[in-house]
Image 1 (cartoon, rainbow, N blue to C red):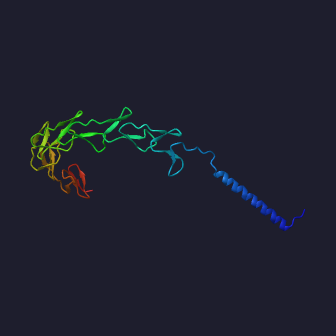
Image 2 (image 1 turned 30 degrees about the vertical axis):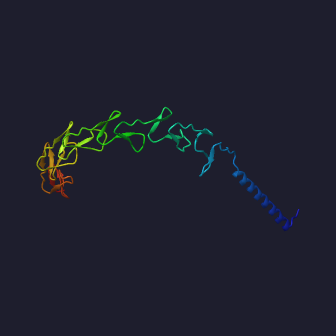
Image 3 (image 1 turned 120 degrees about the vertical axis):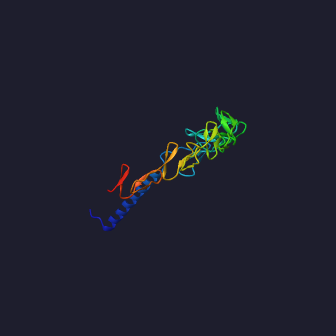
Length: 229
């Protein structure tokens, strides 16, 4: 059988049109969701992405949004997971609710509203705030823990007192309230309760801390000497 060129061209156009319809139908089928889970009651579509989130006052329980039971002295936290509520300032979670935080005399709630601390001049003693007993040559600190006091410069704490610091020659007072309360001048090092002079060997200099020495370049240390490489 002989076909004309015009008939052949008509047949090719019909074949191309049929292929385009198949492609369009396939793309449309691919875009259709296989199954869509409807959003539960008391929920809203997420602002970004897909899915849903529970409305304020509700929390996610499986595929549902259950109403949150709000205890007294609590507020909705806005989260759709967990309990969904938090206690007011000055209250803390107790037995599924919010209990008042007892604040003793001479104390105040801290910024979190969940703890208290003693006023200056008082230290925590169990569930109370006891007055700080400042010894002679001491002063109050801002801490409500520990002793609540520190010694003035030139003194150090010994038990419940401030004892004067015995300063050896070639030493100076430090700002530390612990230890000896002093350190040696540069070029000296601590030896017991005195400051001993650092003896520099030939071709050496004081180290950065000033209580020892190291060899000049290019010399290297060999015992108590600096020798050429």
